[in-house]
Image (cartoon, rainbow, N blue to C red):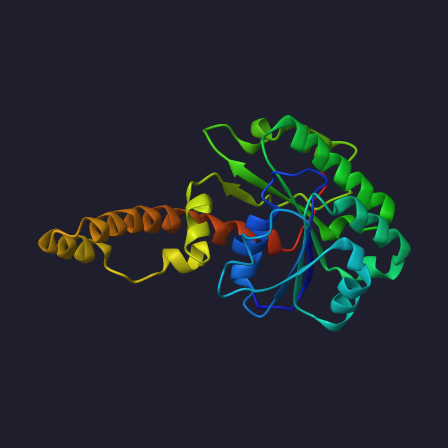
Length: 255
């Protein structure tokens, strides 16, 4: 797919769904020209600490500045934290034309019942604000185990088959699997993709550390190899989820 500048908003009324993690590793890492605005009063760090990402921190109370950035910047990711989501949506009601600035709304959800119910409420809010359902996408985050997403995210996908059918674009469904790397990568100042493609030969580093009897270097090499392996699997998953997220929605033909 040809790279196109886009204005993307990542939000959910609920916290603990991985908004900032996905803004950095699912979106920002694949959009190297994009600027990220982190709208948050709490929990700064995940995206701002990554060296290769262009991140600015603003609170929802500075919505005029955010809106000006939305009008000026064609390639933009706005990551709205849970502590600012209420104020952000209130501001959108005041500046109605701001709604039309966004090309895509990304709503991460996770298996927990509360977060799934909050995801449904978020979609309903966006619908009432006037967002086109074709611009609203749900990312099924932290999926794990053998169960299909229909079982793991039963609340959200049940809603998708009923009242929410036209309030979001559901196909194909972007799925991001649970992986310890999303916690480990925070100390590296790198994206998961950068860590996965790091060419360092950690086995050679490990062997050298053994010869030098350098336990610090040995532990670093072992930890880095573990992180690299986890990142490799996660990056393949993120690539697929990114393709699914930006694939055009094609309605199924009626029988």
